[in-house]
Image (cartoon, rainbow, N blue to C red; front, side, top):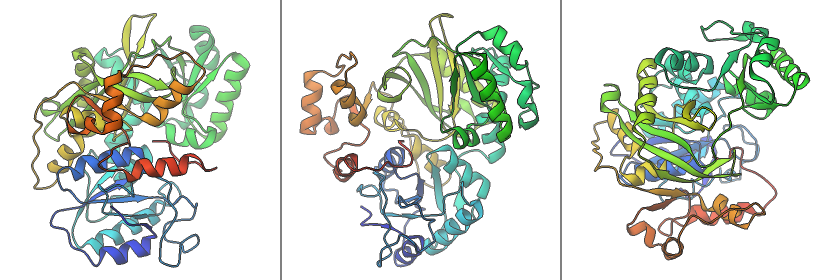
Length: 443
């Protein structure tokens, strides 16, 4: 495990004293998603260096907040894992992209050989693509392709052209000047309100700036006044938004295609469909119980969208089931690993290792896909202890296997953090759960 989370300078000094017999992986962020990626790579003896912003708020290269031995405070769960060899701070790319590039290039220089980057949240994946640090191999498509896939306006235009169902959506004329996509506006605010009725959803073309301005990536508005206020605020921030029908989502029927598409194309894709059977909170929260599912139409539609965009790399294509329309609708495509990345890995599709092998001389071949469930126990137990009605979907045998650790030695169940064979991340979760501070990203 990484013995400590170091400042940038201390990490560079430590890396200068070691050698690697294969390109190490640079994994950012260093929380639940980063932990899943690190474990997937470590299973094939890939060295992992976790890079993240420090939890004390200071920039990676600054001395403020660093201990006398060069350590920094970091509340993420990946650094203490046995799967992580080194961990340290870098400048947060949304604060200073040039500073991020300089930090990463200095780290790679200290390593003495090229490294492979895994961005585990949008800002990190885009930062590696935009900064394009020298000596870093990117196992995913370039920034222009990423922008096209992440741009909701472009994504829904692609769905329209391919006949892939998506929620009824109108690009708004009031924020057209801020649009970065090519499609023209569909409607004015009044026309969209008339077509959709209330409540409706306001969502951005690109969610990064919207999240920073509004603290969320989607706003639900109950009437025309709230709608006008939201659109006006977005216009003031220079953010293009669209109005979307509020989908009557069938709880427990959200599905996603987890995939790695190699540069050769979707015909060679490694893919697993997952059903987010339980979320926390139940209706619109984050996934906490995900299981493999046999939904060939979802796989075909998601791969068609990725193929049209020319995207290669790891991605999650999210679908919700619309009760009114009686069909699955494509909601979003995340062009990077996500919280339950451990599910496809356990099922037999080690997406991070497939991506790593594609840009190195390593080899990886899936042994085949087996039915698997993934559970994030921190949220699942919170549901069981909560006031809302929730029926436990794990059996008594499942709980015995979890407590004993037998689930690690076989069967169809895996976890997001808790692993008796790698106990430090779960121990750190207990440690940080009861202090008055939050990690900057729950994923």
